[in-house]
Length: 151
Image (cartoon, rainbow, N blue to C red; front, side, top):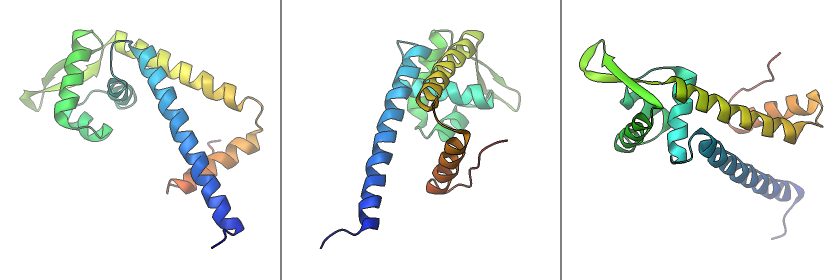
């Protein structure tokens, strides 16, 4: 059965979404290496989450970044040994621990995010604000959210 215009557009959309996901994955790997060369990219997800949301229990972090608790614990231990995160007793449960980024961790995440931002700005440098606004709106619709350009 021949494809109609909508079918062709949906296939093209799928190709572009796959290309975007691949580019995003590559950018995340570069950002993770910028954060710390000796860590897996998953550690950068943990650090980035802590940077955005602040100190938390390892179990909360694991759930938030979509990793199993064992892997999260291993990565946090490695990050701790590198001086990127530190723990303190949970005031609500002295058996538990609350993890936070150290100054070195904060600096590393900030540098990685600055690099990411610079690359995105380079890619969209010649775009109009209307182009950017439309992309934000359309990606929000595609992802099931209600994203809109911030004013």
